[in-house]
Image (cartoon, rainbow, N blue to C red; front, side, top):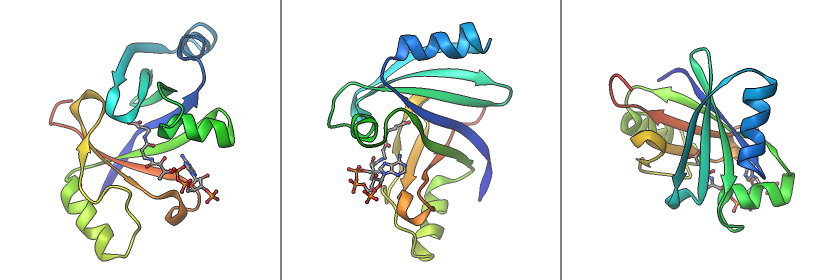
Amino acid sequence: MIKEIDHIGIAVNNLEEAISIYTDILGLESKGAEKIEEQKIILATILVGGIKIELLQSTHPDGAIGKFIKKKGEGVHHIAFIVENIDESLKKLTAKGVNLIDEKARFGAGGAKIAFIHPKDMKGVLIELVERAKGK
Ligand code: CMX
């Protein structure tokens, strides 16, 4: 079902400052920022070999990232795995009794189909499933 890691999401207070740390200090490449209104975030993608780091800044205090930072501070927010067929994956997980945040996939950054699994069922780690269009 799971192919590989797509990205690691990191919650940050200040996107520009975070981008500068990952590019100027660590020497990684940034692909630029994207606002995702539905998720109440602005995200910047940092490329690390075949996988990505998504730096996530909240645009509203009541969004998922805003609430996370308020409770836990900045840091790793989620791990995203690539799946070939997200609808099939969600059906399989439902059959196994897994607590899904999204019973149906929705659209995320870059037009990918995404869905989240509740951290309570994943040993305290928020897991995102991602299905990318072929060639993306
Ligand atoms: N990782 C681990 N645990 C987390 C967490 C995270 N990212 N976010 C919340 N939690 C914990 C909370 O601390 C809380 O723990 P306790 O019960 O021990 O206090 C528990 O999960 C449940 O929290 P909650 O208050 O019931 O629910 P929240 O309103 O905080 O929502 C969650 C939590 C995961 C359901 C919500 O953030 C969500 O739906 N996330 C999916 C969407 C998302 O994260 N979007 C942002 C990124 C988008 C992207 O990258 O595209």
